[in-house]
Image (cartoon, rainbow, N blue to C red; front, side, top):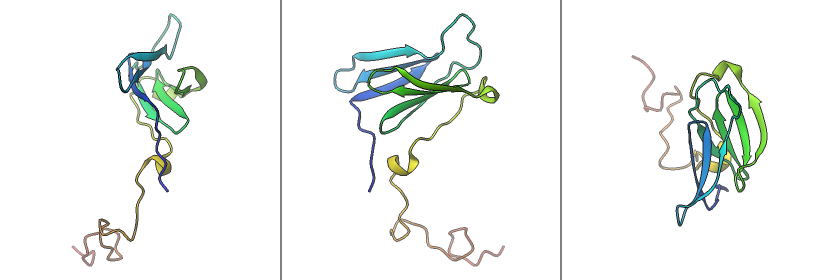
Length: 123
């Protein structure tokens, strides 16, 4: 069974902020400055990933969990090693992705050597 996040919002992030826009009318429903204070060092690029119940964000080297309906911060965790970098994020991959069906006709044929080319693995 595949479960997908189904919120009424489009989420946008940038310059250290996250926004929720109504999918139908385009109005901003909520916005939040993810890191506050005078000294905001690090990358202000915002990576977002929507989970079933929450919106996850990463900016300024801090991972955030947000209530996706209000924008309120549920928790935040600094990751110093990524402070100056844009980063990728995956949430609930087994729930949000289509999954892999080994019996599907779309899957590559297996020949036992792991490369999926149907050959003997030799050069």
